[in-house]
Image (cartoon, rainbow over all chains, first blue to last red; front, top):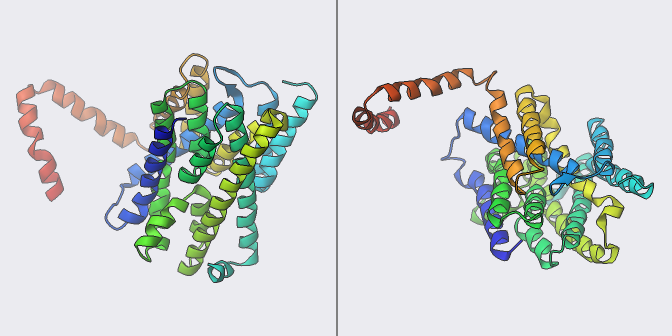
Length: 102
Length: 259
């Protein structure tokens, strides 16, 4: 990352954050726009989850990372805290690598 | 600040504290992964302080470190953060105490702070939940990043500690509750499949943006009338001569605004 890119991302993000508190009395998004914005966030998060769990660059990330993520996701679905889920995912991945799985 | 924090009951304080700790761990993984990817220490530190959005930071850094363009990195990060606009509208009431609150408080807006705030009804408790969670997460995220940067140089490979599994966990934890809604789930799965299928050959960053095409997967249910309205005018304008279309189109928006 270069400094201009970081600053652009930071300013843009701050702008998005400020929009709501600044404009909430004047800006009324249609229900459809709200749904679309919320849904595109969901799609991006899911896409990021899938690609960051399964790929590194253009290739497959190996089995240990998705296996760890699966353990963390199962815990999260069973209402474990986020901290427990993250630590379990990392520990599983690290353990599998220690055993020689890629 | 302290008295505000005390308006929250113990259970809520403990919940916010646990999320703060978890975000610190993820911040550490961000710092360690960034340094391991060959970035100078100031890069993850500056990003955590100024961007303060884990998903966008991991995404932008991943794209940049994977050889993608800066434009793709920034664009992907900003699209990912567009949801903050919606969250901002939903918590706007807690920042109506003045300009300073709005300008400074807005920077603390993250998914978790919005979620804790939305769960409260009482105005004072909403304010306390928002500021308590926002301030705590800002501190732990940046402290975590710093520790990760320092540890990353000592560990060498953060993969040995499984730290690379923390990133997908952040996204999953944020997205899992939303996946209960069927249309969103369909869109999300379609988008993820599309991104995975194109990741082997498209430049870094593009597959994630391409995944947004998954949004059309919802069309078959809730937005059917909208889809119909979209196709009709296209057929009309094609039939009309261009000159008639342009003169007709000009006054149309004005009358629509007046009405």
